Amino acid sequence: MTDAARGHSTATLYEASSCALACGTALRAAWPGARVAGPAFTIQGIGGDNLALHRAVAQAPAGSVLVADLQGAAHGHWGEILAAAAQQRGILGLVIDGGVRDTAELAELGFPVFTRHVTVVGTGKEHPGRFDVPVRVAGAVVRPGDLVIGDADGVVVVPAPAVEETLDKADARVADEKAALDAIRTGATTLDIYDLSRMNRGSA
Image (cartoon, rainbow, N blue to C red; front, side):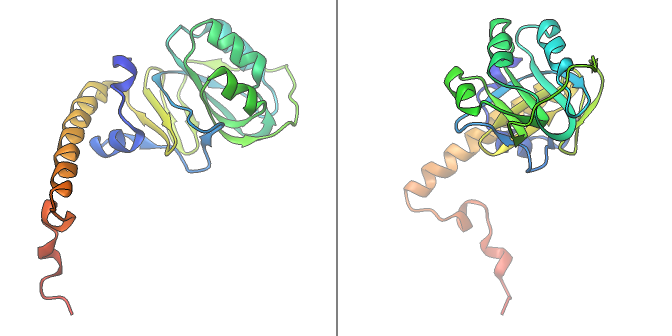
């Protein structure tokens, strides 16, 4: 989707959009340096069961990000085998409100995962789950096709209808920030750049 969100960070995209949603801070990268950006393939599953994830890997289109509501359950729903299978099918990454395991192997594969828990607790394989439905992940509602971005700062969701406008605004924001950094390097203060000096006038 739009060339991996044009390389923008979660912070830039969130600040550029009035409708972007930030997932709760409990959702973090499973390994340092993980980053993902792409359209959501949504999964509604049952905590403690990972059959839905196996089915999703077989059905999700290449270039998508799996976004799974596993009810925040502290079970290792995902690991090395599923990550390798997902990579083979061109899936970009996983955002899961639940738990995963094999984080060292996920890092070695370079498969980005954002998760609530890291745990070795096992799972069953009985519930097939539901796909392409709205799901709630760490407090944010994600719909099929929404842009999902994850990096070191967290996970942000941009509704599909607002993606192009948000990316254009993010491009402009990055240009403004570059200009601000150039000004700082030549001696300007952030008070000058953002016209903040007037905010303190008259204060004790």
